Image 1: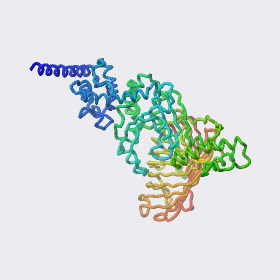
Image 2: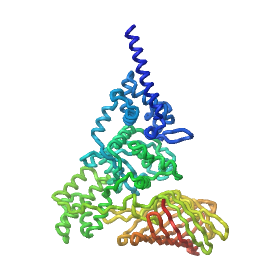
Image 3: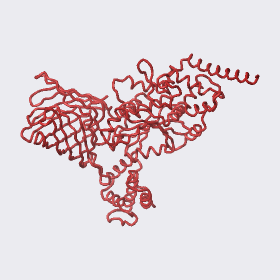
Image 4: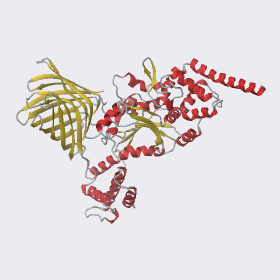
Length: 620
């Protein structure tokens, strides 16, 4: 009886002890504190709060994703309950950042929380040993929808260790659909799940820099070691936690801000995007925002293998480049006899460049492991290393133009003057300042233009480009590339009645581009084109389309673009629709540009309909 009474009394004491810690936490208003909002990824919602994390494994309370008070109470009870040691240890393993913060603000004695640091977590922290954090930005690459806007991740660096063996935390979607239209739809509507993961940095570097051909920028974060350690603890408790991934806003760019805020909650980075009028978050704009907030130091640059090869192919004589390609293509490079006319140094340079090409092909899964190793060993054997080690860096993201654009233009269509207003939320095209973006590339989302004709007192939607994407980068003799383009939306289109009609369009195709000196290209494309709308006799038309173009950049401040296309439509129009366009753009700064534009539209070559306008573009 005495033993039972003692156990009952002890149990009540333990319970009262936990209740006391809960009362203290609520009395201090910790459930409303900024740190608790960050650790729970809570966002204001309908007069209350709602977490961006939908995974029930991240919460201890049944309504924890929308009730910060209940989740805080459940966390304290789970972690301090000495009567349920297994539950307490599980809490320690799942939520190391929560425990670290609660111990600090509540002044909980060191031995009060059983298993206050999970052994697995402790081993991982010792292995990572973070002293500083680096925001890593793999730039955009037009190799697939997932790579077009760039990416962000965070690297944890230890003292006196190579960054290659550091660990990184990233957030990404499980997107296995390569169809462009279903990818866009699923990404826009949150049909993908996203997840946080910790992985060795060299794996991520190989994935982004080598396989996906992205230049990589690393920005040291201005945080102290204690703040960096808190970031790591929060990253650990987010491992394998899934959330709804939204292409425009709840993406890597937004969700990684919570990890930075976990280190320093006073930054309030995420709130910036909640309060902005736009409904999207783009990785490159996030880098620009953090840079202006003073959180980032000057970046380090890692050129992609693709950019390295492009640079070397332009840097050396053509015979050296040709020899490198011959060696890389050979099944047994060791049996190849050097061509006449190359010096010994040039032969060795060609062998080293060929080794880079072989490494690139292996990263693209074009070579099997055994073939790569055999070729690579032969090519580098006895080589002293003659390739330049320093690759001129591309323009860093913080010096590029912001992705959102507004514009105003004054022009004339035939003899009718008009005022045109335009808005594009993202991202980049040939008429924008090229520095800091992929070469000769276009990716426009919801590029919208409207016109007012004062003589007719009429307003017209000129176009709404749902998406327009393309790349006319020519590559080089070692690494040639195909030109491609596709797009869909609605636009004013001239038909055989010589009037404009607002029609839905979709089209795309591929071709080839060629370098002209250092800053110009010529390209051609063969496309399929679809039109639909009331202006057509059968409400639909389709046919082949050919397009040619020329682009030249002068002194990095001026750009000339010429293009022409002809499409044959055989269902309704039963004839050709032709277009020609010219633009001369002056890039005043990374935020402003002016351009002179002219166009000519024709119907079966019978009559040209001219248009000319002057446009001002502002980026923000």
